Every structure is written in C-alpha cells, then in structure tokens.
Length: 151
Image (cartoon, rainbow, N blue to C red; front, side, top):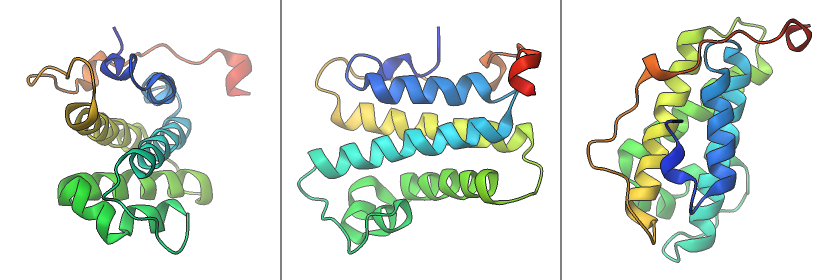
C-alpha cells in the first residue's frame, strides 16, 4: 500500500504525482524532488480554487502563491514551511549542478506527506485520514530503476 493512498478517492491526480515522488525517492532523488514539487503545485492550486478565504497574489508562480498572506494564514506556519522546503529542494534538483542525494528526496517526500495529510484532514469530504497515520521512510520502494531509464 502506497503511503499517499489516503488521497486517492478525492485527489487522484495528486495521489498519482505523490506516488511518483514516493517511487523515485530512493532510486532517483532528483526526479523524486521534481514530483514532490508537482504534487505541491496540485495542492496549492486546489486550495486556491476551493478555499474562498485564499486570494490570488499578483503573480501565479509557486513562490508567490505560497507566500500570499491569505494562503499562509489558511495553511498555517508549519505547512507553509514544509511547502517552502519542497519548493526549494525541487529548485535545487532542477536548476543546480549539485548532486541531489537520497536524503534530500526523503525530506521532500516526507514533507509532501505532511502537506497531503493536512489537506485531507482539513478538506476531505469523505473519510479523513487516520489521526495515527505517519510517514515511514522504511516503507519506500527500494527497487533500482531499469538500466534503460538510468541512461
């Protein structure tokens, strides 16, 4: 069972993107960080569309969206910090020549889990995720990527 399955019923696209981040966390940290950001963008855009207390900022970049004061008020300082961390790790993954290591991917996926949990706990119309649900890095897939994919 994938750790993001609690998103499947109400946010299938988010579940798919988060599942990709989860699947790549060990074999390809750079790709995992990119999928974590993609997942975060899905969360942020969903919130702007469905939470009337959040007002669009002057720009629609992810950075502007998560820094908008009404967004920050709606999600709180903890989720804001997690969103910022995911965005920053993904920016490094895409724009830096620095090696992205497994621990970076594990952080991005863990923080994404917490953001997704908060989304589902706060906004799910159906069943809410279990209060005891936690992220388990040891449950991440360890299978290596096929040689063709690596090339």
